[in-house]
Image (cartoon, rainbow, N blue to C red; front, top):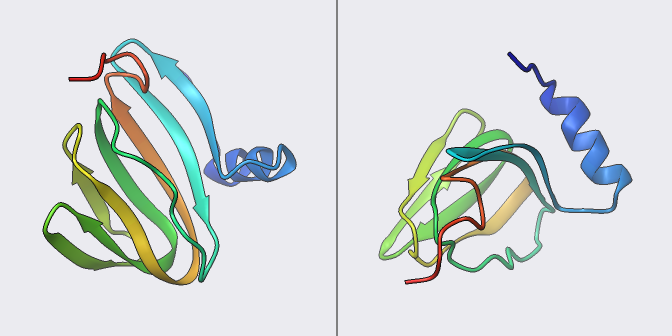
Length: 110
């Protein structure tokens, strides 16, 4: 078993000057933190893995394909591999737990 404190993982990412920091990787999945500042852009591109976001803090909107919804603490989002997606209209700094399955970077582009 492994146990992680999300707040500590966010602090590690901040100390490293990174918006995203992976803290667990096994073949079937990887876990990361992801931070986006209020009013800022979300520069991510589609991934070759399925992805789940859990919103820990903050408020924004999220667009995936043709769908667009509000997000807030407690929101869980699932995005299939290769689907264009991003957070936008970020009104409060976002802190997100991100799960990739399989582990990020292990699938070959289609």
